[in-house]
Image 1: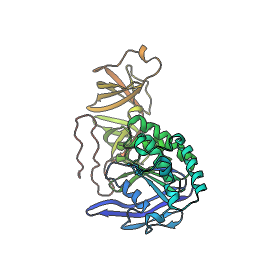
Image 2 (image 1 turned 90 degrees about the vertical axis):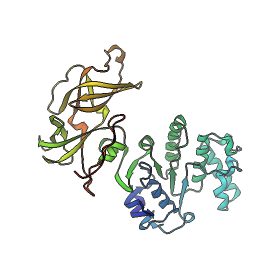
Image 3 (image 1 turned 135 degrees about the horizontal axis):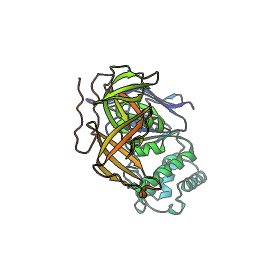
Image 4 (image 1 turned 45 degrees about the horizontal axis):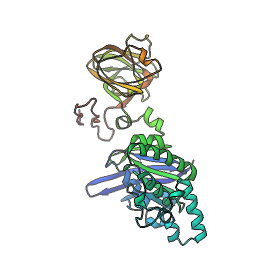
Length: 390
């Protein structure tokens, strides 16, 4: 697919705050693309630059080969859905959806045809005569989507549209949004701080932090192969182990010293060399827990551990282990004979293991300023590490 919406070296500052810092990004035609990051990372500013609500201090915004950087919002073929829905309270569902076509002075027949089609799309034909205050949060959201789509924009911009909904309704709306996108086939640019929303909806994701893009990729690429410590920490849970490369096993694997463990085997996808400081990141579900010592393998890391804490979560149990002075989080999936097994309890001595392919090495220092990358707490109540030069 070709690039459809492009941000070319775009920057935007608000007073002393650099909201967007030299961002270049290409979004393909018809894809569901998410901007994901914490509050204040610049994702909503990016959306507002695409909508025309803000203008960049530098750089260009291109839509379908046309430079729209200086165009006002009403001259761009994009529509925006906000968290607040922004429905007209005095108009019915039917009238809210028809509003854009009436402003465009479309014929009565065309308006009726298009509105009825949109009502069928959002499955609200039987609610057409209701006012917004008679609708649930999910129904209001569907009406807002229909109103935004009826003028057939080239891009639909969605700014945290599900944030005000409760969990069950939000999960249902994720399915609805995915279905609507598949049916209309236009480009969706979705802004969210919720990793679950972005992972379940998106064709691709751009993870942002401090006005910059940390990584762009499919949900699987972002989760399974994060390029930076920030991405690994922000997307899902992970264990960060601080260490140093001690030797190269072969062209693909190396050994890392972590605490007093001299030879942790890791896939060397970043071509690290002996002496390089690294963060080894391992997802909790990649670590296996057992009462008996696992079978030895040249690519498997095996460590004795003690169970410190555990939480039963239904289909899984989350454990916190102590090994060699390190606190490791493990997520264990329950299988058919779970109740027949001898349960693992607090203070039990166990073995934990993971394959060298399941850990990924990340830089300990930011390339821009060589500052130590601050990591999130590894357990409840543990303070964050402060960034700073070594």
